[in-house]
Length: 159
Image (cartoon, rainbow, N blue to C red; front, side):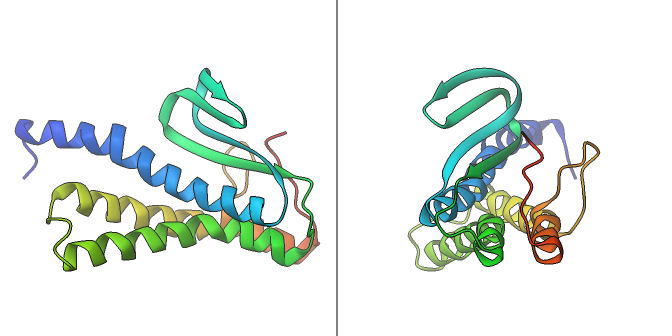
């Protein structure tokens, strides 16, 4: 049962664990895009900009969302776009496997933080690969992969 004693863990999950999972996910997109020679812009959060360092921008509501924009791919094919869109979920999956392996090996102790990390990572994998468009027309990663193979192009709706 959820009690007032559990509130601190809720805030920890919401303001720390969820942003870490978002960063892992977006890091997958960033590294895949860089692998194919793209210029990237990585944004964590929404709202007014708190700070910007190079291609990395952190917004006031840092815990709400994140995205990676890329352009000028060296290898500009349907498959490279699909790999970039899929890389976020693959990084989340790898993080789940690493965390569970470290717990199994006794390096990490069983803790609710790791349960939450794995839970949010599974959530990210499912909802990023589920094909849909947000209310403002942006595609999920799954929808973007579908669009790339159906139409043969990648459109960045954030620009």
